[in-house]
Image (tube, rainbow, N blue to C red; front, side, top):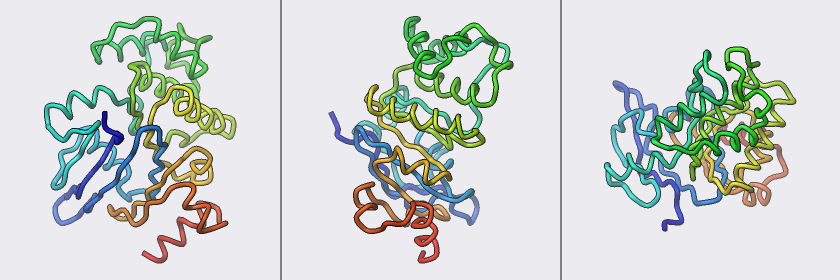
Amino acid sequence: MSAYILRTRGMSKQYGGTYALDNVSIEIKRGQVYGLIGLNGSGKTTFMRCIMGLIALSAGEVELFGTTDKKELQKNRRRIGQCIESPAIHPNRTAKQNLHIQQLIAGISDKPAIGRTLDVVGLSDVADKKSKHFSYGMKQRLALAVALVTNPEFLILDEPANGLDPKGIIETRNLIRHINHEMGVTLLVSSHMLDELSQVATHYGIIDKGKIIKQFSAAELAAVTTKRLDEYFMGLLEEA
C-alpha cells in the first residue's frame, strides 16, 4: 500500500495562451489534512477538478493511491469523496434519498451507512425532510454527507465553510477533525478562511496564478513565524 494518497508531477492546464495550472507538483500522504491556499482565480478549483478527471490535463500526471495508469486512476477515483463547487443535491429529495442516490451512482448498497453518515454531519433528525427546505448551512452539511456516504479514503473539499455563519464554521471545523481523526480519512481542503484552516490543516500549499509558490507543514510554519496564517500568506504573495 502506497504511503501517498495523491502525487502530482508537473501538472499543467492551459486555456489558449493562459495557464490555469503551471507545473504543479504536490504530495499528500495518508492521514494528512492538506490545506490549499490561494486567492480567487489562483487555480485551486481547477486543480481539484483535474484530480477528479473532470478536466483533462495539458501536461504532467496525477498519481492516486500509487498508480498513474489511466484505467486504475478511474477505478481509484471511486475511493474519493468530493465536494467541488456546487453540491450534488437533489432539492426535491430527502436527505436520506440524496445519500441513497449517491450510493446507487457509486454502485454501493449499504443502507446502514446512510444513517451513520447523517448522524456524523448532524442531520439525523431531518433525514426524511426534503433538502429544498434546508438552510444554507444544512445544505452544506448534506453535501458533505453525500461525499462521505461511499466511505471514501480521500476527501476533497472546495471552500467547505464558504458562506457559513460563525456557528456553521465551527461545526464544519469539528466535522473535518472528526472525519480525519476518528474516521481516518485523508483530506484536501481549499479555503480563503486561512486562520480557520490553520486549526485543522497538517500541511499547506500556497498557489498563485496557477503555480505552487510554497509548501510547508504546520510544524514548519510554527517554527518560522509567529504571524497568523493570513499574514504569512500575504507576505509570501508580496515576495512572489
